[in-house]
Image 1 (cartoon, one colour):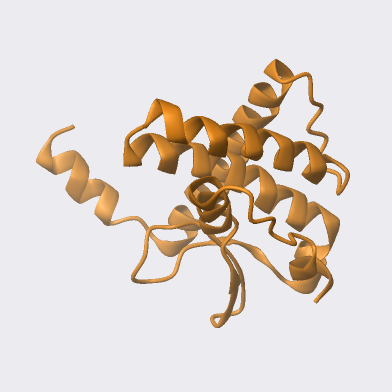
Image 2 (cartoon, helix red, strand yellow):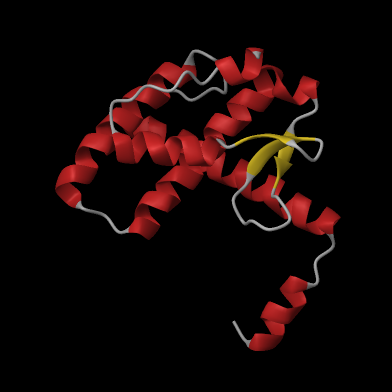
Length: 145
């Protein structure tokens, strides 16, 4: 990618940027659905699938200690599974409360935001879950408030 491509990308409107974030989140969540199949799990975007997500994250958290992936590899896994988690949260109540995928003005991490101040970070939560291991995160307390 040349310098001119980078400059063109930098001139995206916030609507285009938001559309790209949503598109990437949906694409990443579908990648998680495919990964889940290799674990004989069915990610169907329901609350029930969070238990299956926990099992997969447990597996990867233990595997990280032995395989020693790069920070970029861990972050990629976090984006994939965090996007799935975010989509589950949106489909099970958060979208009705005004949340959608966005990024903050100064950041690059996709967030679920409602307005300019309230946000949830499913990608970050998955990252912490992978790195910290067995610390279970109560995903749906964020949906139900």
